[in-house]
Image (tube, rainbow, N blue to C red):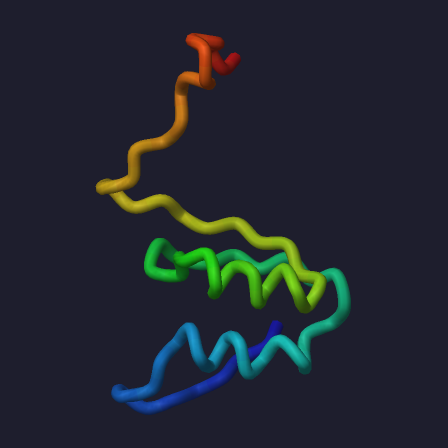
Length: 72
């Protein structure tokens, strides 16, 4: 496990991006709901990592595909 301690004014997302260079290749990241955003995720993917993000209450998940196809 890796830890990065910061102060109350530090960005947890920024600290995570700074840690990517120190993580073992192929690491899987487990992140909380505030770790969202296309650019943020793209940076993680660009470093070769996979991740899981907890969805918050306000997230509506896809349950129907285009042209009325239903997801299993």
